[in-house]
Image 1 (cartoon, rainbow, N blue to C red):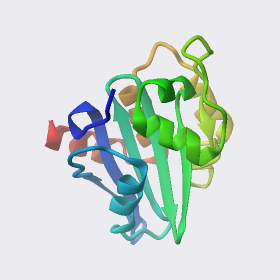
Image 2: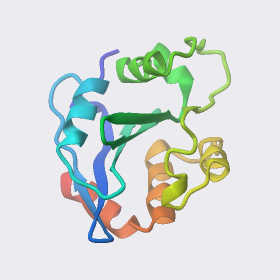
Image 3: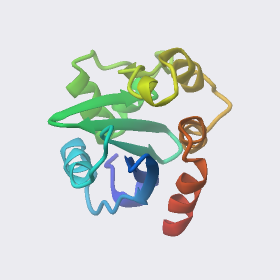
Length: 160
């Protein structure tokens, strides 16, 4: 299966400016890949970097935090890499083995990616383990915890 912009449930960038959160829809066209996503995020300012929040086809989400020249990554479900190119690229970038579809759905990457912004690694891990939530709902919970839930909702509604 290929990742295209039409498979996206959510694609937003969030960053702070003068202490206030700004959340804007990410405009991603064609084949979605990790380098395109990181490049799109580098265009935004941000006192604490920029956070990319992407949910794909009710299957998984990816958090990408770009600060300076570095990109930190978290994927909500490593098993998505067997089906989705974006997930595969994240797993490859994290240099972890590819999981089987039969493996347990577990997050991978930097669980402390947003700890300094207000959501601990333990809380983020617990959220990723909640099988009753869709990835978009998990991103909503993250946005609420970080203090930009309303802006997140508005940005998601603006595109769809």
